[in-house]
Image (cartoon, rainbow, N blue to C red; front, side, top):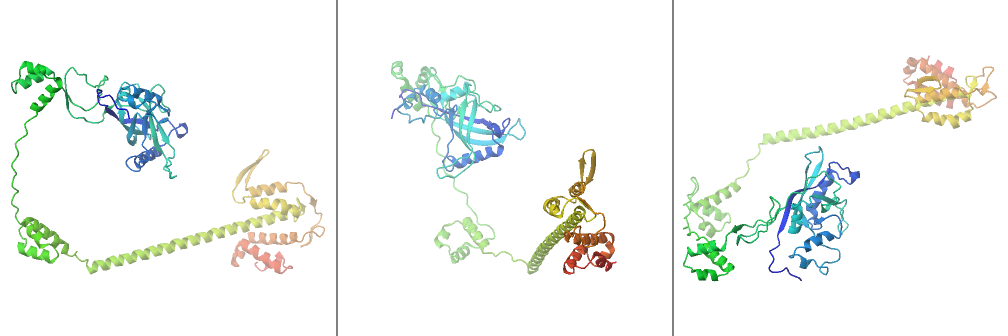
Length: 513
């Protein structure tokens, strides 16, 4: 494996904290945006899938969104310390280097947009060539790539997860409502080192940025030789014959501070046994009877032995018993609570049953009333009143299904030509049928139970039913005296008529008058 030249300075890595990598402000999900909840899930998966837990996903930092990262490889290869590692032969396919790694991720409220949130990331392991470009503002914006549903090798789905972050320079990111990337900072602290003033420092040219945390104490060779001559006799010839490294080594050896004299140990204070504690022999005897080792107890000082004894004694003291009267009260209220819950459960079930019964009765009443209205409409339309607007077959085949589907309760406003009127959809349909040209006009009143030309006897039955219904409408008090509703009164007549064909409406209503 190639190695870096020995005369180059050690490679330093930098970090970048608090980078705004995405904000929900200004972008909807339809515009490649994400919701606050989706970003929060990405943060959760960052710590679940990353090096802290499952080690399945470690989002890298790159330059741009290109997968080949040729620009990044070229930048890193310009550093003589990295060039030997970035030859074409050492790169495995298209897997190039990363410009850093994401080490922290969080979601915070957006200060400038109500309800929006910002995704904040921390970068680490940024090589100096890339960090210098960030500090020089060559790359001051970023763009993120997010998995909509990260799937591991076993087919487990995790949802939204951060894939990687791209530094943006020439090509602006889609999401432009983010702050510039902060300047980089040193990542690791290095030990102190000495250097001559003439040696260049690895500081960044941009103001307020630093390469590392190493401390440099400028000192020239003449100053160190003068300090050494003050400690012991050193001729000028011997001093001039020494190399820079020898001068530094000797200076470091003789400039190290004298270690302080050892501090004599302080005897621990004498511990006294707590007042009120039993005699030592008694405590040891009781603890030994409880299973403690006698030799270990004898080796304890009085204070420690008293503490062990007090702790053991506290464990032996039983908890105070709850008074019987209090337990009786608790049991009483517990039983009352159970009874109340049972009562409420029964009441709720009863109320539900009653509501269901009322609903069924109302639905049955509405159906019965509607059936009566359809029967009355049939009598009017097939000619029971002397004028026929349709035949029985036409009514039963065409119009009855339609009337059964129409609302006969809600009043609406209808318009026809220049005329407008209010009524139900049912009544409006019947009115339109009655407006049709008459098909047959009777010149004389037909006997009861007889239709023109000896037609359908059902019409005669319907006529009788209509008479009973009219009686029930005008004699509500008499009908109630029978313990029936109006619809029940008509239904009862229909059932009796089926059993006694000769029963007429006149005979049936005479019983109620």
